[in-house]
Image: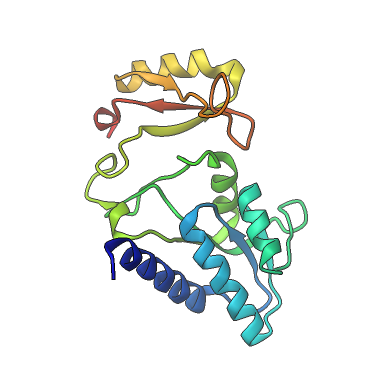
Length: 196
């Protein structure tokens, strides 16, 4: 077994264990974004089918919405179900005190809103994402979502408070700033070791 397939097998197993422990009939479930969450959604779908559970899922992104629908799970929204029993999501980095870096994929706002509405927030991450100090494993900067009109004042305040340089994350496939699902821009603190 290669290292990559070993990591994927561990992620799959962790998701199955988490879903088996936390998912119950009648729940409203938050579904995060990212590759690890794909395993969680498949585990949710299996458990729902095997145990004939009635659950509803709130997505944090278009990707999560599509996973929910592809796996024939019931889709809902925070407009309809504003209190969630449990939410499953990944993280970019997890510190041993359980602080996290999230949102590097651009779903910052939705992920945080869904997590805040959940009675239980389950973070799914493999050992590569664990660290003693945030910024050790995730070296791409601290994602911060900012609406376009507020970028300059927020940039100035971040730099004044924490030092370093807050930069606008460039878009990979288009001109301009990286745009999040919440229609904000992502700023990142490039000297993130100094802000902890």
